[in-house]
Image 1: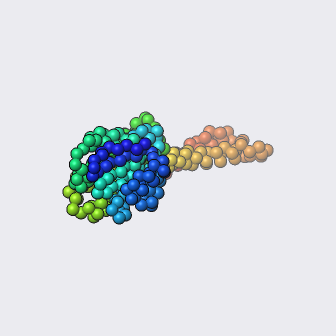
Image 2: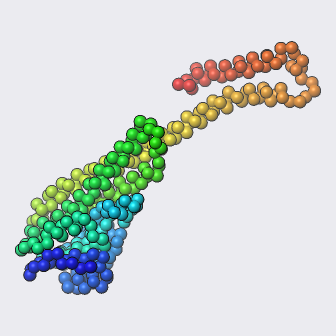
Image 3: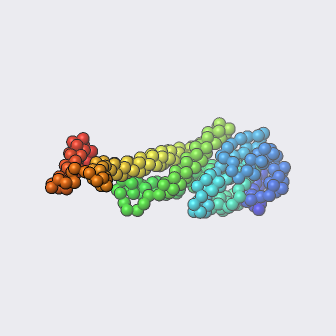
Length: 303
């Protein structure tokens, strides 16, 4: 679907939602967009990038997609949606597969705008990128809350079971957020170099991106540390169980040996005729058990 958001004699903003290759090529021929940029635009998995070919600049950004994320998907394609932007002196073209709330809001805001100068074009571009960056704010906050819940389950020993799968999914999501924000920051740096005279428009955007980058990096590090810690604690619990089982086996091995010897069915066993043989064997087994307990305790095994 092709929609003209802004239409002026000297400027147009054209929005394409899930266009066919023919529709995209038609717009590309009209505004002189290079075929390699069109190929990149058609790839749904393409990562954020910026390039300028001739008079046409091309930018790909990926915004967080709430609808897809609710389905439990944790890949780049599942958590984010690509937004391709082409612009020149007299046009701006946005291409995306699904209409997103932030785009709908911006289209309503800019519809009917008057006299789009170069500064206004970059103002519009900065608002588009600002909306993309801000789309990661809610998922990052939600991930931090989830991380705090996981920490409480581990350190406060709550009865609810902490799933390795849930922690791993959080790690995957944190990694996606971190990677997308880092790539968006790289895009902004290249954009600053390309339009150095208009960098003040992107000052606030750079600051927000750096803030989001710090949060995403910290989240990713904390999730990795928590996952490592959880694995270590599980290993420690296993070691404790094995230690208890080892203690039981060490206590019962000599007793089992003694019982096994006197359980042999030989005709001549001198100890069987002793009057105090039975209680003597019991006393000996108890003595062995007490001796082993004292030895383990002296070694600090029960601390």
